[in-house]
Length: 284
Image 1 (cartoon, one colour):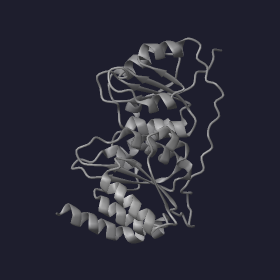
Image 2: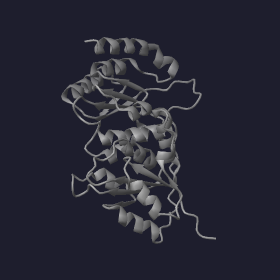
Image 3: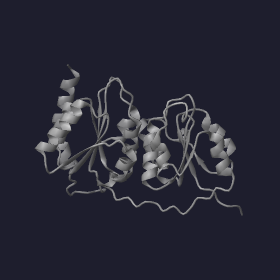
């Protein structure tokens, strides 16, 4: 009996590279997200993230002449949080600015898919890389307090947002408000210490991919995420990955001033006012 190959989850934009890989890797069980439930974004994201968390190998492909997939970073983040084996193929490396984060999280990194195929077909053995044990920040059926002590900000740290973070830090000394650093990988190492992640996606800018990487890690750890999307168009996968969403930095500020306990019974009690503020903001 031949060696049983590990299951590989294929992630990346919905371009034809998957068919090429499926044909080139016949010995491997391959998880193809095109076969996941597509009737609504919630089911699709659940299936995608489940595969990212549970498949022992994740193969992410960023095709040449195509912007790097945004939601793909969330899948990589969740997979990385669990300690899975990550193979990155970034065909844009050398054509666009290199993304150092992808190199840092990859167990194997290639700039074209043929090299990745050759690697997998020539004696690849999944090492006994230990799965990381994850303790959920939001235990199932928890009726106790789920405190908010450490808040991490990612995405666009604008001048306005930076001023708000400084103000919150001064007015709420019992909470720690942390701005992202220049090294997302280092920030990710501390992700288990964060109680809430705030991701800011401003108008006229694309959704920050490194923020999605952090959101994927938050998904794995059951850390709540508040997204700020000041855009006319909202990105459907993001809505399935976050707990709350607003399109106003001022609403975000009000939320952070009020929230001390993420238990649904407590948190929902003031969200109704937040919904009203959102409606008023949108009517301007």
